[in-house]
Length: 376
Ligand SMILES: *Cc1c(COP(=O)(O)O)cnc(C)c1O
Image 1 (cartoon, rainbow, N blue to C red):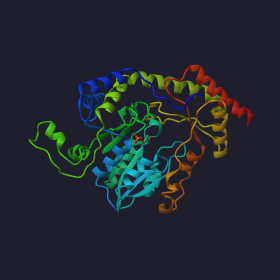
Image 2: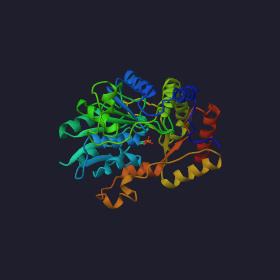
Image 3: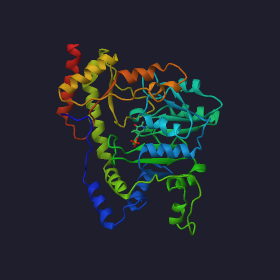
């Protein structure tokens, strides 16, 4: 069986975990957490970063940080993972779902403009597959209407918009190190805060509503409860594992990109005949090779392709049932059709992409896909 996903272990992860254990420092915000923070600040120029237990938690921190409350509206793409919306729904926000672009799963600027109202408090943009949304356009919409921008950059490590790292555009941004992402720690995430007015509070929300982080820096002589918060910081065990992965980030990225390119070349024959669509990365974005996907002509064809690959021992999956049609949200949706989100929901399929995958396995997977189209 060729697995859809399989984390790759370099060795430094376990060495670091062992070190944390032997040092007897297992709670959060220790040396490995600091090493990860420095890595992100140095590599991407982020001012304020906080490791979290997941991207979901970083999104929930964002909602707290922006003071999202009942009556506020938040614009979110329908074609995304449930946490993007759930984090804001938890604070009582009214979620207004926007459509995808017709040729890319990213949120459509035209659809956003139709969703804006005087109650709009924030837009959450998801960089699907690590490919940047149109950030110039997004920032100008947010400025024009005085609304916050949050980047759900869960999939967008090592991604750029016109050479500037994703995660540095929004008032805040969130990353994921879930086992299915490029850089992993099992569960894990990161909050980036780019708006100076929000940084002090972010640290407090992170540490259960206390000013303990400032206390540890020696800025105050005792710490206490000063605001709302929760336990969003991960154990040093997670940070230690993550730091081991970060040391190998170039190997991870080179390995993913070369595999991605091999798929792209071998499947050209199907896309040039109009049988499938391959990922179309906008000119202002780079490709961080988070996912390799193809888009079929119908849900039926997509499902038959997945079954065919499964029969041949290849793990392929689809994802994101449009959230405006989810059982939790359907009755709350305002009834607008979101046809592009629905099309990606029906027709997109993801194929294996990880560092254990050999060239011959990629060639085999491509041959099976081509075979499927020869037969059908
Ligand atoms: C993976 C993912 C998340 C959730 O990340 P966790 O770290 O598992 O909480 C959120 N949004 C998007 C777009 C994702 O791909």
